[in-house]
Length: 125
Image (cartoon, rainbow, N blue to C red; front, side):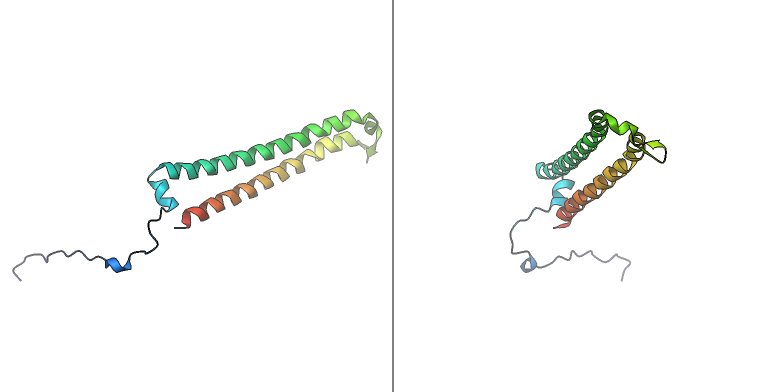
């Protein structure tokens, strides 16, 4: 020992341990390399999230617009009262909030499911 540092040795796995399944292209690697395939997967997730948002928004608007249309079609409902409160007020005041909350819950659950499916695809190396 003359004070010289030990020589470095590279340790590698034998070639026989290589996968016999052929070349695979993990999604995570494709996304990290920002290849066309990775961009395609990300674009697919974005499209599915956009489609979900449009469907939930459209459903929300149909019901939201449907309430005033219902009140216009049936004007006699204006005379009906529950606990001295006119039914149209109850529909507009109390009917909208459950609609907003229900739409939000539906969107969050579905968006989470889309992201979970995408994550499963990415983790499936």
